[in-house]
Image (cartoon, rainbow, N blue to C red; front, top):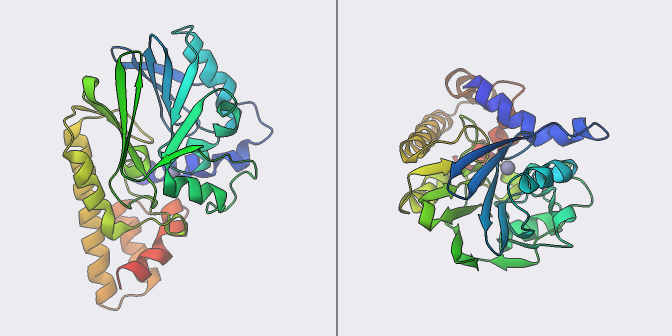
Amino acid sequence: MAAGALLLAGCWIAYTQNQGRQAPALTLNKIKPDLYEIEGDGGNVAMYVTGEGVILVDDKFEQDYENIMAKVKSVTGQPVKYVLSTHHHSDHSGGNVKFLPTAEIISTANARANIVEHKQPGAPADMAPARVVFTEECSVFLGGKEVRAHYYGRGHTNGDAVIYFPALRTIHTGDLMAGKTPLIDYAGGGSLKEWTKTLDGALELDFDTVIPGHGPVTDKAGLTAYRNNIEKLRNRAAGLIQEGKSQEEVGKVMAAEFGWGPNSMQAQWSLPGMMQELR
Ligand SMILES: [Zn+2]
């Protein structure tokens, strides 16, 4: 579990360390017919190829643009027409600034506001928000194929979209599933209380394959297990907080049982907010 937390933490803060460095190599995995995953440096990107253009889910950091485009061109000559954005963090939306001149970017209204209002501490100053937003549901129809974006409520942030490929029975969760343990971004409107309800909305969709925000591709049972671990974590933390335990004491239990080590993003970003939310 500690490894999962560190993986996620590493991804989120990587851009500060990577600036000026050569962008890391990416790998391309075929998931379903015409659906690929681009993995490495930042959040997992989904790539859906149609006869009228390519639809991406997320675009990693700004520095990954050339490598993402090289992966797209290794599969198709079609241009990227749409980027469906799962949330405002720079490891998922940092490439927006490079894609916006030639593609339409779509996100939740809250994810756009979080970029406009600079809600992610330390994010690059040139983060570019989506030009098209939605609040509940939005579909893109291209080349006879459909991709649907849903907003089910708060979790990792207050603007996480779940992206659904109905014909392929596949979803991309953004960071509503990422690594082994949840990272609640309270500054970005996240909520541990709401998170399981939000995932319950996604779990009602008809799917068998899950592309998480970070980590390996999994299935519906994998997402259900992730959801149940969040419930366990929340109940454990709430019990301790209601017993009057201090942040330090709660932090020690979270580290031992859920991988929230002292250097994890969770210890830094989620623990103080969680003490408030579960009081
Ligand atoms: Zn994130």
